Length: 300
Ligand SMILES: Cc1cc2nc3c(=O)[nH]c(=O)nc-3n(C[C@H](O)[C@H](O)[C@H](O)COP(=O)(O)O)c2cc1C
Image (cartoon, rainbow, N blue to C red; front, side, top):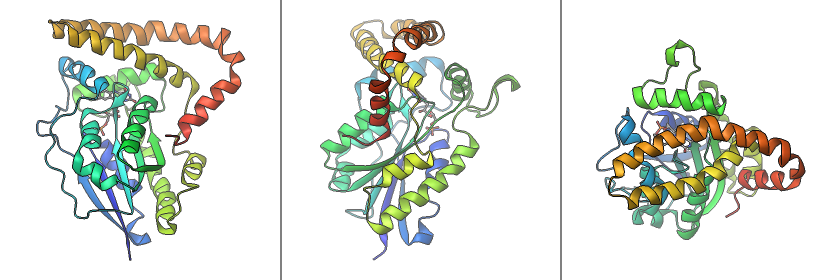
């Protein structure tokens, strides 16, 4: 019997679709059938974004509030493996992806099924993956692999370039000075290689070493500084999301949040990182490595 895989994803620019298509490109020749489902919210988010609408998505992303989706239709009741491809928004699964995770039809399909997560992010996906892990676990799925592709340029440069991309809709070099935003073409292509590793595991029906092999191939990396910023950021986002939702003048508070975020990213985080790297990081080597290993793995 040929193996049967479900790939489900949401994408705005098409980046995640390109990554996912590369990942599954070797499946057919390995005798694996893939059913691809592109998720569409009933009322989709705009792309390109406008600045107010972009920040408007923050509280609901952080609080995990779903939106109605066009009905998810699957050809089978069960699959040998499900690939759940998603992108983080505000350190949480994007609202459409989170809506999939909460969808009863999807939850029924992933029950008792191995799942591989595939992430196409700027560079901060650790907290979103924690939420995804919890949702998968509560639906009875077992996470067997994670591939996370990111923009490898420095954090602050990628803040500039992603805003250019998100607000113009063009994945090109801002002012011809900045690097191209998002996951690089080279890394998008490398998804083919990670797909071969996944295909081998599906064919052999053996997932125990899959994540180890994916990590070895470079399918997922965890950088200390980004981990540090992200872990602090998530707590702060939760507080902001609460404040914004409890105020009458939501749009004004979203503008304040926007300026806060830029200040925190460009001024506060480099300073805090510097202090941490001098005074704390050198004494927490083991603890930090343990944390990195945790995020590289699949521990639920
Ligand atoms: C509203 C919004 C918030 C985002 N927040 C994050 C984030 O917290 N971490 C991150 O790594 N990328 C973030 N990104 C980038 C996305 O994860 C993703 O890489 C990008 O939107 C391209 O995905 P696409 O395939 O849907 O076009 C954000 C994008 C949007 C639109």
